[in-house]
Length: 155
Image (tube, rainbow, N blue to C red):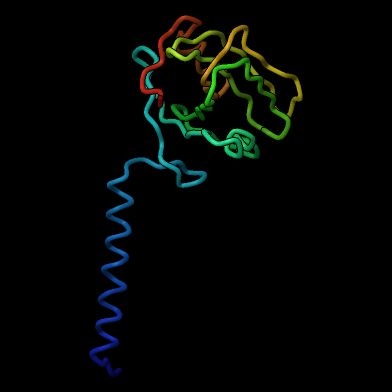
């Protein structure tokens, strides 16, 4: 096999590009399994979560639709530009989920369990800026209740 100088340079550049890409990937921290999006660490008391962000209208509309797996400490944080009584449903979501409705200062306003593929609306009793979806029962199992403070929320 013959290697020209340009062929060696091309292979060398391709190798370094790969190494650089993987280094950048590792430096950026944890990523979600579903979309390679960065994960945000949240804490509710002593309980840690690694959540995906849904901050755009498209991301919020898609949510966890079609997902069949969610890590035990995983979830999705919905971030809204303005506080309001944002409601949720589970029409195309096959996983049973629990939701925490969170106000602008990071306090859990209320919790709800949501059934898979249901069009039942789940609405908070007051204006919220955030909503956190996790595997159903996670909040109850960890003793998380209304009034709990959520740390690490984006502003």
